[in-house]
Length: 250
Image (cartoon, helix red, strand yellow):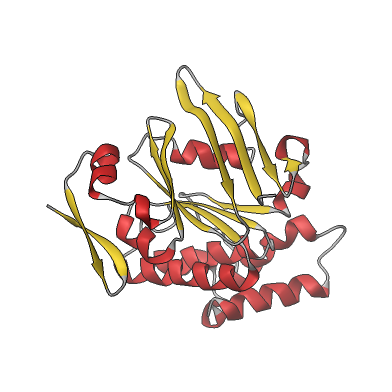
């Protein structure tokens, strides 16, 4: 059984945004959602975590239909990072501690503090732990947001354009931290991302979307000049450099 199963997922507003989406995710996979703005990437992510209710179709995680899971149970299985996260007037430590809420019954216990410290150390945030979150740079705060999501101990991490407002250095740092931590903990990742080269550097699978449908889904072999032309309407060369595919604009 696959870890995540999406079956015939359709979502409509006044028009169809997602049209009969079906795919499976293996545990520990790192999947990039690719496509132009309006292709349905964000809507898909929000249907996977019940922020939006599908018009029809189902999503199963660990064999359980998410429609049957209460919010707390779902939050113990998946964490979501929106592309627009604003810092609250709180310390970095307390901001990350908020991620423990799905595991807290009556009050915060020692395990919650220990898990928060573990995440802070893993993501190299020790120097920021007692600073106010709203005093951090964009790159620093994005790492804190990731740490808060990972503090949930999710089995699936959903990220909506987590690097869109970061410079190149911070884009690579954030993606590297996510990749390494999630590999260590065997956490599956689905990330909506615009930079195809960044996706090629860190992902093992790619889901290309076009007009609310899956255009291609698979490993890097689906990233071709033709598929990019079909999805993005641009001409590129696809080369291999240092044993990694890269795209170059023509």
